[in-house]
Image (cartoon, rainbow, N blue to C red; front, side, top):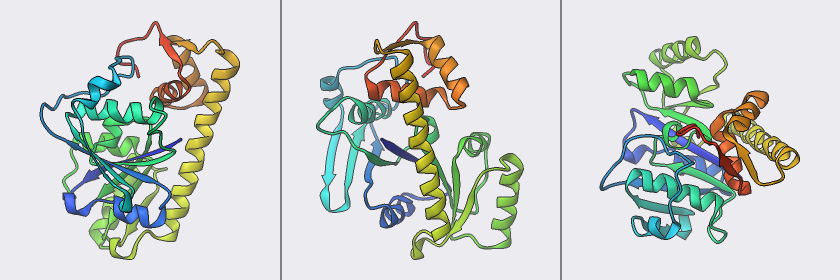
Length: 246
């Protein structure tokens, strides 16, 4: 399973990265999240279950087969949980490759590959710096000016290892960006498979304590959220859970 989530700085709804991404990665499905109604703040906690039937009552779905696009509308936390069910529990709707749009990917889906897309000029706030610290890759749209180069240099002082690409949207993704994304995707799948191997060998009883999950994340050098999502995928129950850890 491969999940990619976007976070945006300085872009309008009409400037989303999804259509450009899909031209190069057409085997993905786009899930566009449109929060509305009673928006609840806070990150999804995987240890808080909710029935699938109850979720469906709060979500409006719209499917566009020609664009491989599924739009979900509803309260933000309900949308997060709906995506979780689709990825891990609903056999009919499981998706192997998904681009999550219309959300703050780093906040809402921290277990996914993180693409931060930026349209300059933009004023970077503290929350935005946190996004940059946690991003897997940064894409600057239509930015080849000196200001863009200065911005990229500033980002490198925060994350020296972060890949940064300046892209012209109308021309599609550059080959360098596509190659970098493919490497990221392969590494993500490798990490998930490594977690699966350890779970299967050390915890065949399909449950793992929160402490053991923490230990595994540290051992593998991956986020606790990624361990939690793999546990979901394999049907593991997390016991003695520290509330909010996942």
